[in-house]
Structure formats: C-alpha cells, structure tokens
Length: 573
Image 1 (cartoon, rainbow, N blue to C red):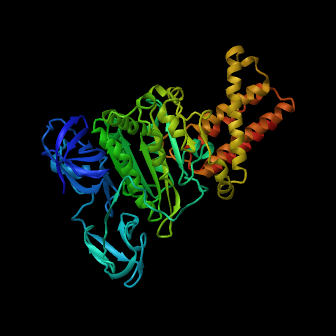
Image 2: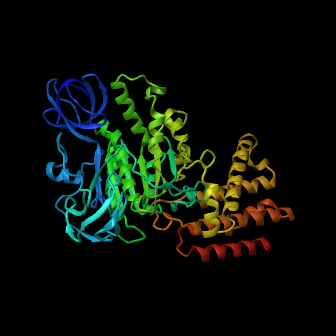
Image 3: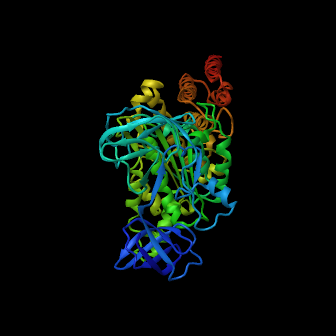
C-alpha cells in the first residue's frame, strides 16, 4: 500500500503529500489511522475528507492507502442493526468502548462469529452469472437470498455446499476461480445493476389517509417531505417506516438532532410489526448519524443507506428508504466544498448540488433485478428548509427530481392538525398511473371521490378569504354548507392520531368508506337545500358528527353504514 505524509489540516479536510492514491479511495490518516476518502488529486497533493474528528492531527503524520473505495459489507446480519454513516456497528463499538467511542475505533459491520444456516437453491454444474441466487439464509422472518455479486465474472459452479457457516466462509466456487461467501462488499457511490426499470403503477400503501387518498406514492417512487422546525417531519417519517407496505425499512438519520435519533432508537425496538407480530426492528436497518458526528460521515450516510436498500431490492423485496434529512446532507457537502475552496453556487451550496441529489433519487425505482425477480426502492426524503422557506436551493433542486411533494405546514402543526400536510401546496404526479390499481383493488369510484374531496378543499380556501372580509353569516346557504363539509374532510379524513392504537393505521378500504360517508352527507345536504330545507337545519344534522368515531373503531364498516342510515332518516324527518 502507498504511503504519504500529512501536509495540511483544515477541519475534516486534510491534504497529504507523496500519496499515490485513486479518486474515492479509502485511506488511513495519522497515527490513529482515522478513516478518510480521497476527494481531490492535484499533482503530488491529495485532498482527503476524514470521517472522524481531526483535532490533534499534525503535519508529518503518516497517511496510507487501502486500495479500496468506500464500501459497505452486504450479507446476513444487516437487519436489526444500527450503524453510523460509514457502517460501523454502534452496538458493537459500545460494548468495546462504552458510551463514548474513541477516534480510530472500528469493527466489522457484519458479525464474523455468528453462524448462519445456508440452504442451496442451485446445484453443481449450473451456470452462474451476476445476480444468480445460489441459496438462502433465514434472517428473522426474511428469506435472505445469497447471490453471485454483480461484479463477478460469469462461470459454472464447481462446488456448492449446504451447512452452517459464518459470513466469511466460502460456500461456492466457480470454474473461473471465484470463491463466493455469504457476504460481499460494494462501493457505496456506485449503483448496483438491474435488468430494466418498470412503470410505477403499484402504490406503496402507507396507512396514512392524507398520503394514500390525496397524494399517493408508488412502489419505486420518490417523495420529499419539506417542512420547518417542529412541523412533524420525523414523526411523519417514523409513521411511514412503521406502516408502509414494504418488506424492508432502511432509516437514515442524517445529521438530525441526537434526541430525535434517540427517540427512534428507543421506539423502534418496542414496535410490533402488524404483519408478523414480531419486533419491527427485525426488518429494519438504522443508519444513525447525528448532527454532532463528523460532517464527512454525514455526507457518506445517505450512500450507505441507498446501497443497503439496493442489496435487499436485488433479492426481490420492496424496500422503503427514509432519509432524514437531505438538507443536513447538503450542508455537509457545502462545508466540504468550502474547505476545498470550490466556486460556491446559490447560498454557498456547491454548484453540483442538483447533480448529487438527482444521482441519489435516481437510484430508486421498481425494477427487474439481475436474478429476474421484481424489487423496488421507494425513497422518502425529508427536507429542512431554513425558516420554512421552500424557495431555498435544496428544496427547489429536490422538487426537480421527485414526483411527490408532501409540504408540511407549521401553522397546521400549531393548530394540532397532524399529519400537518398542506393539501393546497402538496401534490402527487402518480395519481394517473395508480388509478387503475385503486379501481381494481379498492373501489371503482376511488379517483372520483378523491377529486371531489380536493375540489371542496380548494373551494373552502377561496371562501375563507371572503369570510375574513364579510363574516361567515353573510355567505349564501350553499357556501356555508360547503365550509362545513370541508371541515369534516379535514377533521374526519385528513387528521390522524399517530399514537392511537387503531387510528395510527387506516387501510385503503377504511379511507374510501370515510370519504364516501362524508360525500353522502354532501349529496344529501345539497339536495335538501335545493328542495327548500333551511341551511341551519342541514348543519344541525347530528349523525354527521359521528363519522369521526369511525377513526377509532375496529368495526368501522358497520358504524359507517349505521351513520349513513341515520343521516338519511334525519334528512327525511
């Protein structure tokens, strides 16, 4: 391995002299062998971003190359693990060091001692090409497929053996000399290959009514949740992680406050997966990189998360990646860019910000993998614009590449309306492609009901401007009824209690029935008004106020049907 010496230290960015290294190669810096990555080469000077605190480093200390790019270990043992931004296992380091980890400390990402029961699905003499599944390992309730790594030359299997092995044991040999173990390494900045991308025409059911009904996301889709401080980004993402219709969850806490990540780390192990009745952590990988951790590792954590997601996608699983938040990632890039003395772009962010964001989000998608299975990665990235200003560069560049915009509103959060998604500024570009699925699997009139809901909410916004000028009593009867229906939509449909055992999740059928019951009241109200009934009498119908009770009822179907009959009876009376 090539060696050089430290020449200059500027925060997390250091310059080494006499180091014969490649771009993005991992190097060991200083006497404490701190981990770093080459980000610029200029003559005999090599610029390195260090993933740990550089205080105490001195010019003249040694720098050594490793010959490898920044890579992650992929294999059994990833699920139910907590890593930092460069895939160091935090639980293992805590055992060795306690609560405060020394600089230079490292440990293998995958447990080298743990043994796994390997069952073969291929046999000796079979053709083996990148992506070929040779066997499986049981990882909790997940069938973990062991594949030929994507960067392996095709060949024939000369040896394949079942049994109990550690992740480093050889389980398969090819005639071209390649030996396959249960794990392999993959560079984080390089996307894993697939056969082809598929249309995003299957929804990722989240169980959150405002998302599933008004702004749905497709499997393999990308969404952004921008919002100011305290508007509920982390709670919204936690809800999506708990309830999204995905086989594997990868949660990346990128530069978030320590107390928020602590809540996630304490809460997730206690959560029960409703599908398996097992702990939710059994199908979750957490990448925790808090705001007080080194800035360079924050920049790497997003790539670590997406690479782990691609690994499970290649097995044919649906993966949901929560990135909280991409703004902190962009801030890390801005800090490193300024240390490199690069020409700044808008608000000091590097000029390649939009390219990096696009590269990251483009790794999402529903695909046919190299093994011929169908897998998907859905990416939901939180954005934290300073002061809630959506015109700042990170939000605007994110909007260019995502198809879902779930705008959080601080005013709604202050009124205790959660999830505080602003229905007037949010949008989803997947509505048309997902319409056939909802028609076939939920209800024929799903899209029609959604369109009516949105038009009533938009009409309410227009009427509220008039109300501020002349008061609600001066409005015509029809508009007064429209305002009441819009309020019912907001309170009975869009508001959802994340901490209630029943209301925390709403299946599409329940969401549709709630929409239909509200619209039933609307139809009866407008028809009665035309027939000469007074608006005040229509607004005093008592049954309509019981629609909200269905949110907290397991047997919601019977309740909503009873409410409909009661409404009809009241209107007839």
